[in-house]
Length: 140
Image (tube, rainbow, N blue to C red; front, side, top):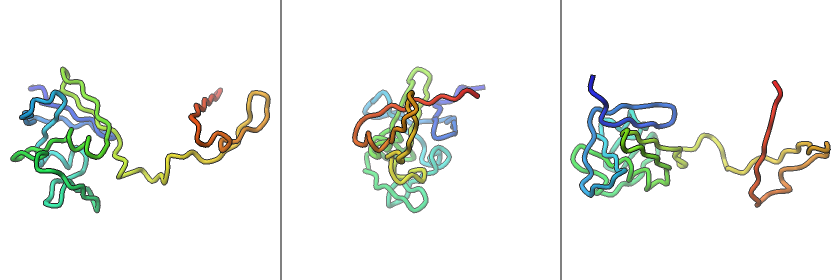
């Protein structure tokens, strides 16, 4: 059995690609995928108006397209999506796309009250605007 040309990790899926394109600028972490592979990678498809997923279409510059190939790494950078690459293993991992969201309206934690080590209530709102590390523990 032949090794995949690349493995793409996206959300909860792992997609093995049997063919990828070479980067003309020889950027080490660039991943050029076939346009027809894009829907199974991240549910986007290339249309005249851009890279589209459902009602969301993101305009893409012409240099992200080359024949049947699409520069997935450049697209990820355009939309501020984190990318991690293990070049020797030919594995690309793409993080969450903020524009798609997961139903959260903000990244601000709701105000909750928890007891400190002395049993006194501490409200999370008291720390608004500051960096805060919340450590939890359970015995079960």
